[in-house]
Image (tube, rainbow, N blue to C red; front, side, top):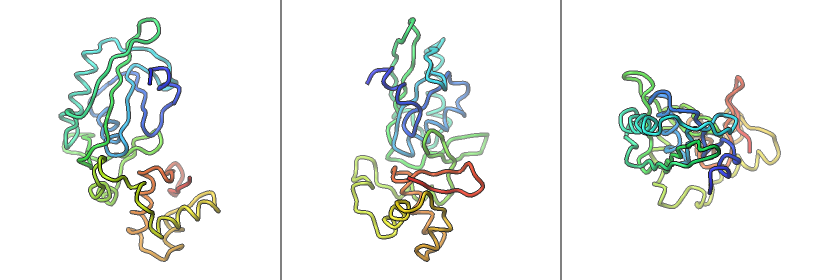
Amino acid sequence: MDLLELIRQGEGERLEFKQRTTHPTRIARTLASLANTKGGRVLVGVDDKGRVIGVRDVEEELYQLREAARHYIEPPLDQQLQFREVTGAEGRVVLIVTVPESAEKPHRAQVAPGDWRTYVRVRDQSVQTSQLTEKVLERQPPPEASRFEQIPLSREELAVLDYLRQHPRITLAQYMKLLNIGQRRAYRTLIKLTLHGYIKHHDKQKEVYYTF
């Protein structure tokens, strides 16, 4: 897939645009979130509107990315990343960073000295997770193994999808009431379905909710 085709896709769960890498702590969150979810790409030298602005110093960008992957993510990701330089319009260079889905989840990103947090990819955002979500990630099979999508869904998981076919959204409280189950069990199911693309997580309002 060429550069313009990638850009036309727009930012999403597996694609992030970065004008430039300003500091390892910021890019570390993006890299970790992609590795913790389904993998993806970061286009460095492309702004939020999808315009190719190019990078001024490719070596400096590579240095920042490698620093982030090696020292600001735990376990480190530096051996997993792949880099490719692409020359766009007017000779502007874009750095394509490919982040495979990791078999060593969860990866934590350093946001401040001594402060390490876990992020996953939800739509076009890197979202901080809870301790419960980290446990879900730890229990996931490696990406080369059978994927969650290929395993028949349980009754509790199918109940979420059935509910959303008849209603525009579902909250954690509604799901707990629907099946008469506890908070941890309900949340674990909703997170699994979100991470594997069955449903979408929305947290911009007072109460978090989920949709198709």
